[in-house]
Length: 239
Image 1 (cartoon, rainbow, N blue to C red):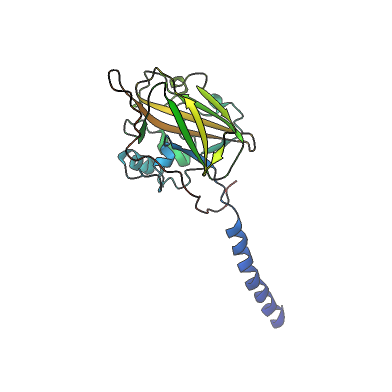
Image 2: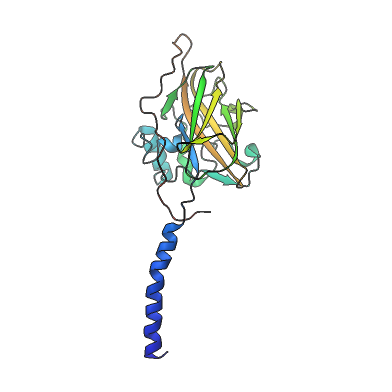
């Protein structure tokens, strides 16, 4: 290589480098969504979720070995409705993804939202990239033990609500549903979002608390309800 050719190559490389950086920066973050009300475990324990310093979230982060920065990316490809065959017992909250394994910890102190049995629930599912698809909502059966890992047998065979392509407003899918009337105590709202625009299915656990027998059936929310995030933080492309 001549000296002139070498100098030209260096100039071309230097000119291309900013272009490559700009191309990477312009690439949209491949993120998607999770429930923020009732708050899901993954969002509550994320850096912006408001409960990352709680005992349950600290334990989950320790089990992960990393914080839940990708709170909106708990998805599994190619499930195609075969949730009970693909996701094993005890791994429902993580979707059997190692990066989210801390969400499967069996604890009674997960951040929770207070609900009223038989009441109306306004569910917000924050979306950082819009998709079409169907949401299926399950509520653990009466008698569920939060000190044991969540299994499919803890959930009814059929969801209590099924919503396809709900409206997207203010950064979240909004759904109005009626809760089962026979639940008391601590339960898990299990949300499955099966995309029709991608091959992905999303799984989320939201801990909720209903009044025990004899208690007033109030609708007060948890002390620190989660806010819908304004926008996702840019991250390198994930497919």
